[in-house]
Each structure stands twice: as structure tokens, then as C-alpha cells.
Image (cartoon, rainbow, N blue to C red):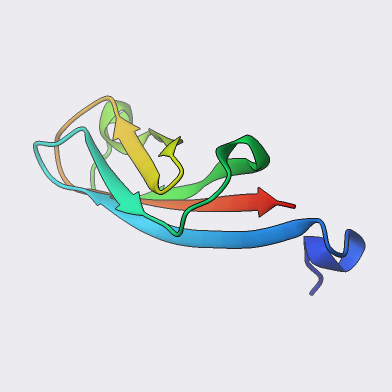
Amino acid sequence: MSNLTQFLPGSIKAIYRGTITIANSSTSNTATITSVDTAKSIISLLGTASTETSTANVLAHVALTNATTVTATRGGNTGSLVVAYQVVEYV
């Protein structure tokens, strides 16, 4: 299996992956990562997991709120939701 650094050596400074759990009755939560340069970073939603079936409760988006904070937000607030994310910081 290959990765992006194989094709673009020296272009990626760091990759951070993690999960954020949004608790029942909540619409958002945050995770802390090592400081990145937000002008040289992108964030991706890798997926979500929940036992809920309502679209508002299981669809989420992620944002790089600042250099050290990833925020996951959803439309509903029923059940818990696990949100997976990835932040890539480029050189």
C-alpha cells in the first residue's frame, strides 16, 4: 500500500488522525491536536459511527477551528456519534 509521501516526498510535514465523540444531547465537541499552520493544513472527515438512524443525528462536519482544535458538529442531538477526522499539514 502506498501513501502520499511516496509520490510527493518532503511535501507533508505532519498527519494527525483521531476521533471525536459527540455525546447524547450535544451537537458538537472538540479534540486537541499538536499545533499546525492553518494556512498550510487541510482537514477531512473520514466517517461517522452511531446507532441512530436520523440523518440530522449521524451526518457531521469537521473544522480546523484554530491551530490546535478540531471541532465536529452535527444537526441533531439524539444519541452519541463518533466522528473520525484527519488533518494534513504541508511544508
